[in-house]
Image (cartoon, rainbow, N blue to C red; front, side, top):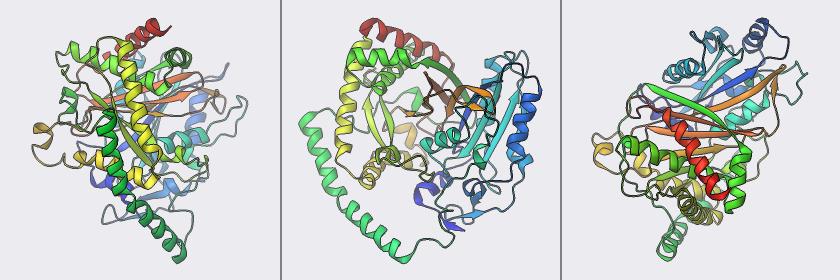
Length: 454
């Protein structure tokens, strides 16, 4: 048993039937040349017959919820690992419909909070794997690292093991006896030092807002993306060549993330124009910042939640894509300038202040009658930079699936993979009609940027 940090417990306490709080991922694999139907059976066996389960995947929430983790010594793999099939004609469309339904169902809190579905039936012969794990257990960066740790760069390797069988360190497994008193004193001293700096940090942010007028504040125009959500989800996914985005980034002297946000900005503008729902004021995006990567921790660091956030102006009121990119890049630079001088704890505190309105969404009428702190969440999670394989099957797509909540009915997460960026878009099925059209608008938005900066 171990105590549950507040950053973990808040995802459990906020969860209900309309607001599942798990993250997921859809992976596509191309079987090795010459393999037959047995390849899928072998992959399913590799997932369901592993008894070397890491502590992270053995823990489940104890009672009362949000206070402690309990470790299960044995797992029911028939529950956690499932064999599914895409209905005919076996297109990507049917696969996305299936994963949309799977992502909308809650995880069983009486068991460790994860599931894996091995999916057959795609007409092109690829094998799909859908994973989901509760956000109380990992953040996006940790989830991608866990996925990467189960894969190999060697196409001939046949000793790959599932994600949960790879030894990992987690807060509940680093020590069976818990923190020593000296460690608690040191941690408390460091926390007090950081918290003492929050007030001057807040004043520094306020001064910069007044001086530069470049920071996007956590108050955005109300859109159809910012109303109440139901439990049903819709998922859309597509890959873009990394080289195309990097070329625009280099030509425009902006970052790759700036170009991604400009793609999103153009797509949202076009989509909302179709819905006759584009606000006159510019929309904004909340962009998570991984403190794990910022602090330089290696890939062997403990999985968990270590994320700050910035708010970026998407400039959706600007018609020209080049102008939107310039304003996005400026807004992002100003926000990052503020974070640069803060400690991770101060970043967490400032980020919490920015997202405080989200904690008020359960109050009846709050979402309906107030403006959102931002319009959409856009996350970019670094993934493997080389071709990766699972027992000979090549990874051909890795599409993240995140969370939507009241007031935030759309979430866009992307992950790098070899020479591609894989976009995963999750939305409330009712609040975001025809969500898949965002994929067409993302392509059109990138093409416009290429024309301006090619």
